[in-house]
Image 1: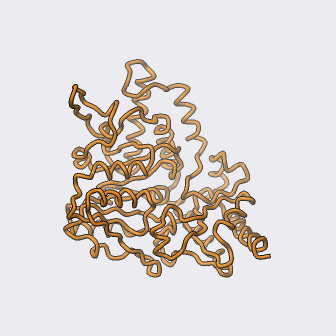
Image 2: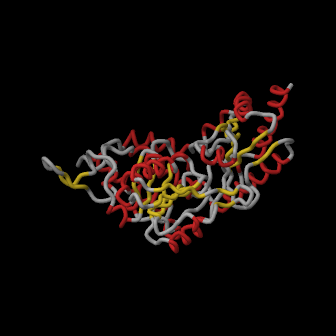
Image 3: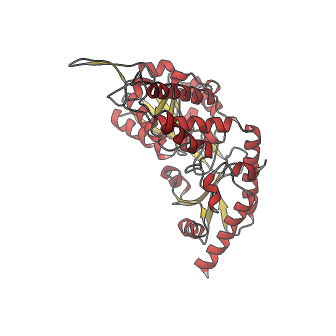
Length: 400
């Protein structure tokens, strides 16, 4: 793959920066940045609010962008709900699905989860007096514990990630969902695709989860836009999360009725410019050779792992099987993760240090923090080499 050519599409990468924190947020191609300007210069009206031309154009852009997002994951247009983030999406579901969970039920999630796909279910269980079940992660075997141990007829809801934001571990989602359906065909299944969406082709019909949640900024789009895919029958049954303009059918003095899905869950004015830019990010990806991108990311991941093996007293979390994406967390015996990240920052190398909003996993692994590098198809092998040099430099500074 011609990395130099694709890097030219990303303006920030021209700033002599080594950006290895793509699990936190991805950089934006020029076409995405240009989409904002184009929208505000020619189409800045309030969608669904006016008969004048720019309002009609904004409405058309919103509808077409929703269709682009739906097509990207093989969903129907009215199964796509826009939120301001994946976190808001999970909270929307936890609120709207409350009636499906009772005090005798179980709510199931896993140790791998980002807090956004853990805390809402934890709090839902507390609120409904349901029992929270947490599927254990076996780091040595690189697998989640058997879901059938946790999913019984009492399970009302099961939530899990398609890719760990700490280790890059990729569960066998189709197999897990099939097993859940066999154990309890009434359990609602929620999948976090926030990390996976940039690295794995997702077909919601094949996956057969009830809900899939992700955010724009993790897949080369802008911040401020999240997506909840939901099966239409379930979305129709759910109560709205927020109240106000756009989401109503009729307001009377003492009662109101709600608009059809997806409007029912999109109260207020949406970030149409952001949604338009997000659709442009997906169009940018669709214009690339996805197999080539995936192959290059795998090659880059393997190169990174090979270079890390050469570093003394360094441990990579997981990555002892093929079921891992390009997210790598390391522990170095004589370097604190934050010290390494600080010295990397001085060299304009961007990595992440901390618990990565995944404290249940950290507790399970009996660690407090890691240094994480996360890769994209615009990264280069020489950037990995620079990170390795930062480790050596950090050792000299810290240890003398």
